[in-house]
Length: 270
Image 1 (cartoon, rainbow, N blue to C red):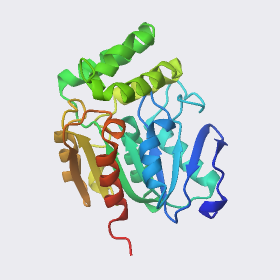
Image 2 (cartoon, one colour):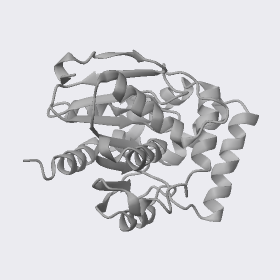
Image 3 (cartoon, helix red, strand yellow):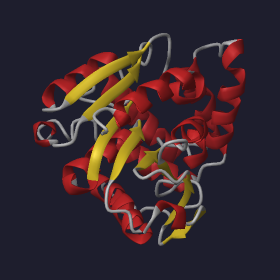
Image 4 (cartoon, rainbow, N blue to C red):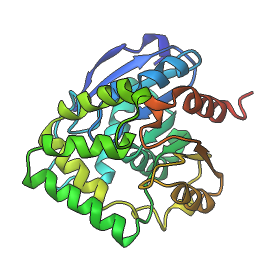
């Protein structure tokens, strides 16, 4: 299917999606836990000038269906494969943030023939025992307490405490997404995210696509060291760091992030 013939939005099977732009090459954007496809608005605006940009709601988020209680990372990668099939897209660049980065890497490893390039933004990798204990505690709390109890601490972790005045608007937009998430979908997805930081440790050397591991200088839980460690295992891997940024760098530092994405996705184009 030609890009200009794709629907601009809709639902394909279990998945709600949007398509922007009509470029020859498709770029898929996969959000993180607790978010929805509209969190990519700054990247969509920039990338749609040269690409067909496909953004979608992860299972359990936005307008997509709930995942099963025992959902696996492979199922999230299958969600993307099914969506590409439904839209008639044979290949795409795949960009994921946080949990979406894990999904992007899983897809690229499982479907190398369908992956042009892959970008893992703010990806987690082999957490320390202390980091693992903290994230597992947060996952358990999503099952044991009201979802709203976790929103404030999450915003502080992602934007700083207190939230800088300059980041008040993006922080409020992200908070609205967190408060509107499907509680059960969020809990099930976060539980998988909490336990998947080492899932690709032995598989990264088999990643065929050129890969960019992009993270933020002050993202303690998706640290520059993690991105470097992943990139060093990938045959065509590289890593970059956005100075002064934290976890939600796509909305707080969009110009810097967009420039890195555009340069990498267009690298080597004839």
